[in-house]
Image (cartoon, rainbow, N blue to C red; front, side, top):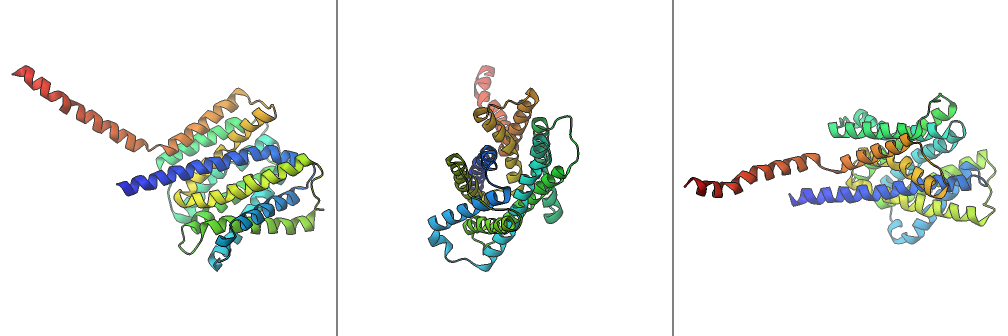
Length: 318
């Protein structure tokens, strides 16, 4: 029993850590908007991932020296998936509306359990299905408008969502293998992603450095907190939760992005957007609460009440 409680506690803590990661990514949209005014997309992604990698590698150098082939292989695969994620998200926004991009990129929450079922034959439970429906409804209310039209950007954003679902499944498989060091995967995936992005930037763009202090500050914050800390925490935390849970939690990203835009950019949602945020928060809460345990506990309390009331009842009959 204590072992089960301990595991449950670890999962809740892991999910809370992942919610903080999602908060960082929600804020990152504002920072990206600032950076892209002076830096090309692939170049920006190369900078943020390589800066994050070197910072993490320097700070955790003793833990990084000894690395096995399996850890490097998974890091390279995850890095490739992340490269596709950020190419899809960055260029998708350029060729479709922001509302379409926000909805389609967040489809990871739906794609992850579908891929999990196809690959691992893990059928989602009834509660997870309900959570998925709540989150999907919430995302739609927050982001869709009446002009949903297929476009090149829509396809790229769907690629982003699909690639990130693949990333979560590969990460889930990696961190549950004994020979794989989860922390090292979290760091080395940054190096591989940054390297892939740098090669693409050199081939397709003309790399340049930021020109103003504000963009430098935004890029460094993106690199350290929204990339380095966030991806390492994701990989470590995913040891104690499932890929499906991670996918649902990351559906909160549009909520945090909307809050950041409200506070710092003066943007306002329509009423249906706020209703959508409530749907998504309700889905996360439902996912984290063990409804069956609460229900069974309530039944036990009800059964115990008559037993406590019996003694006085018997004395009255005498």
